[in-house]
Length: 449
Ligand SMILES: Nc1nc2c(ncn2[C@@H]2O[C@H](COP(=O)(O)OP(=O)(O)O)[C@@H](O)[C@H]2O)c(=O)[nH]1
Ligand SMILES: [Mg+2]
Image (tube, rainbow, N blue to C red):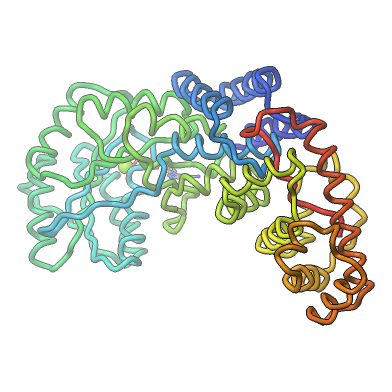
């Protein structure tokens, strides 16, 4: 699942890695490749259109985190838009104020309704609930037997039904009464399926809905059937009104299109995914985790997250202005180093940085965390005047600063040299490939150390 899509998206990001900044041209090319990748993954064309439009808007807008490379920016945007299309946040099951909560499990034949009913019962009982199940498939005794066997293995109750209960509605009503009297708080109703949507099935389900007022109507769809699953979800929703989707057989080699489409097309959330035949093979659906799996770039995403949390955007822009106007002081130098430090172990930060421009030179630099502490201490020991203008720091001042920071004069000398180098380097850096647009610029986060 998602392997192909993931691979193709990663190629898009890789191609952007050499770019200095996002332009209309390189973005256009990237969007074209993303569109093809999504369509090949069997994502609904309406969803693809929306996704591409959203990504484009964001990439071309001003909402760009300045600390990220173009490739990282696109990863960030695609990630956010994937999460949005997948449903923004995990959708939990809802429960009635007045138990038992009735949940109808609906869908086409063979989609996995009975299996999912048992899986959900297991999941509920492990999450503090006392579920009961009932099969209302009055046409196929084997179907009811299937649920009975699954329930017995799980040691969970299933309502057996009495001889006079011949309609699905009768069965379900009695089951609800049974659940109520035996202190069960959820009744899962496994319904009959058809190979295709037909009026008789819909009428039966509508009647069940009327009789039981279910809090959840979960549409079970087979992920392997791709866009057919999306189409039937849409149809079920139109005729019955579903409250959520369970996508089964996500362990198979489906291309993932259904998972990416169903939320947007039906407007209803994916609540669980089935990832195997066994009763424990059910997972709550987490849009963010799935998006990150699709992107296959966990490390970059966690870096982006940290950068977003810690780097004050306004400050970054201000820093860039200073760079251009050559007002970058020792104080700014210290702030930048502090910010770098907040991102975590330096080596890992550097390993996540795009390997472009000046960063190539950093490859062989050994990063010493202790050295950062010294740098900060040295700058802290300077007077505000000294920090604003390093030219006034003469020999006597250097000795005082070394003493005050518990370092040596050599270290102070070295720091001043590094600062001068960084200034020079950044000046050429900002004049070079960053262009003139402040908002689109990359914050130079790494220094020679
Ligand atoms: N691999 C896999 N098989 C599943 C999954 N869910 C259901 N199945 C299988 O799909 C088939 C049909 O399931 P069933 O629950 O009887 O479908 P129903 O007709 O909708 O009730 C069975 O062989 C199940 O074992 C799943 O998540 N992964
Ligand atoms: Mg069944």
